[in-house]
Length: 141
Length: 237
Image 1 (cartoon, each protein chain N blue to C red):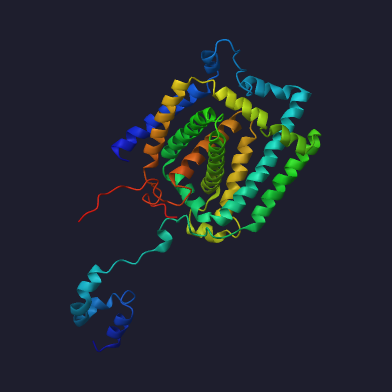
Image 2 (tube, one colour):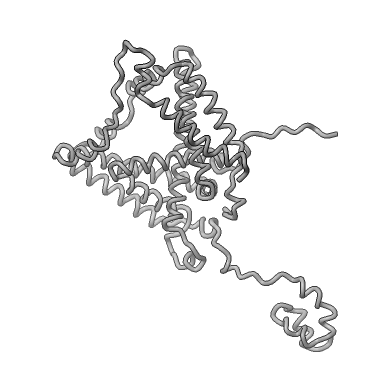
């Protein structure tokens, strides 16, 4: 443990691993430890985790996409000659349409609905008891 | 996957499909009350009629208006997706990972949950004449809408990651602006939105995405990973 090579090995064992082959004293001291030391991990060889780079916020992309879609919608409304408010109002369900839907739903036989209610909600609860598997399959978030 | 889950998921998918078909079948009205005329099959037109609307000028104009409405709704989806991703990016990412890791489970859960929403709404509608029916229906509607919106944003993230996500670390480092949760969500909105504009297939794909979305939202408890039910264990001395 007196040579400069020995000191260099103590400072950085991984970089000077070949020193163990030449120095019997160091091999006696650190040989077993070096044998069980974990190999160096190549981070770039590992698969990309989903959280890597996830915090980046690309506002130019968001702005461009929103403006493009807005422009397409405006152009289509202008081409069709329909007011956007009228077109949207015609496609939003009104209270009368919802009431008609409720009336239609209530025409189903009560017994069938009751049985289905119990069966489907039991299945839903049974399925909800399973824990999510995303983490356990190596897809780190 | 355990044996129980292996059995439950396909069985549940089939049962939910059957239940949904039975519930939404228009012939129910005729069975319930033979005197009342059966309602119109539905507002949905047959596939051929949907396709043939482009052969006339009026049909083309109506289709253009419908497309304009869909595109403007897509703009609303972008705004909602950006807001939700900014405030709950990690949760959205977790739900997105879950739908990619267990797609069949999320689909089965979404199908059962959608069926449950419909049937529970029918049951609650019986209570409308009483005071309790309206608030129950309102609460169910709010919950269903929140589930659908959050789930769809998770699906946008999943689709964006599948289509345009970085595969390697070097690829991620090379990208300057096409990276991150926000970019993946926007990519998903654009891809699914473009598919939605296809006359028949778009509606089907969007509906399937909704089912997947509801499933992943409920499977991950809106990305919070909380247990759905607390397990009961007896106290030990």
